[in-house]
Amino acid sequence: MSNVFGECSLCHQPLTPYGSLVCAEGTICRNCAALLSPFLTKAEVAEMTLEQLNGHIEYRKANAEVLKDLKISRVIDGRYDLYRDEEGKNILFVKGRDAVKENADIIPLTAIDKMQITKQYNKKDANYVDIFVKVYLHDAPFKCVEFMTNTFPKTDVNVEAYQQAMDLAYDYLNKIKELVSI
Ligand SMILES: [Zn+2]
Image (tube, rainbow, N blue to C red; front, side, top):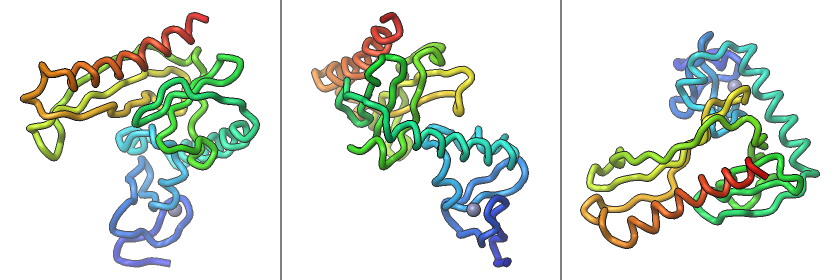
């Protein structure tokens, strides 16, 4: 099967103009891209071989199986909810309301290297500043969990909304630190 965009290197279905990702050995379609963790960056995918991508997809399937029976509870309510498991060994970042449905990655606390809060101008509107939480990992299926906690007009950096936004970002870091040391 071939079309103007070529075919997916993994499933060999025709590629669509949007949503496909370049990897080290070709291009994968948006359906295959949807099987990857949302925390795997385009840059990471670009360096991965087809074998590594297949391995990652296998990891996601295994994650889904474990997640079905994992007892988790929410620790922080935000753009990404932070969950912990009952035994306090793993954390999960859930974008929607259903961890199982979105197959949220189960992240062992032992995989965490360091954490960071960063601010950068909004890519679409430089009058806005976005606050990000970054959790760097080792021996994990992706290098970093990165998500935006909040965005606000840059003229308002001294107002309460900014402080609240920063407080929320620190909440994530502090909660994770607490869990790591339990
Ligand atoms: Zn595909």
